[in-house]
Image 1 (cartoon, rainbow, N blue to C red):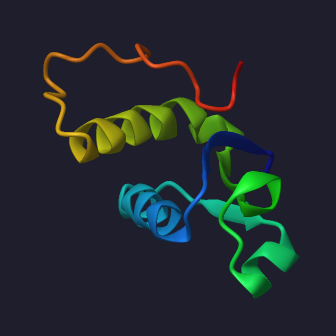
Image 2: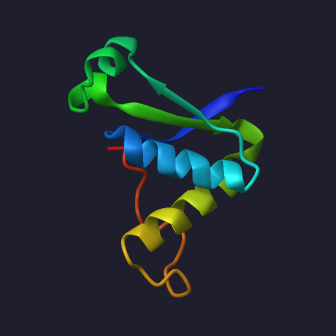
Length: 92
């Protein structure tokens, strides 16, 4: 199974919340973070980055669920928001 990154977090609580949400919708999730960052509790810069990975074949479904989750967390009306309006946070 090939895993693909769909988002990056900078705080473990946020990452765990999204992980739980996706897993509740039957999307397997891996969270990857530099080992030293976890050990010393670094949540800034490149060492603090937490990568959210999902199986490649479930990428589209996971991205839709992620957008819905983030929109709700921000208080947006998901019924009127267009998917894909926000660029991926890791793309320049």
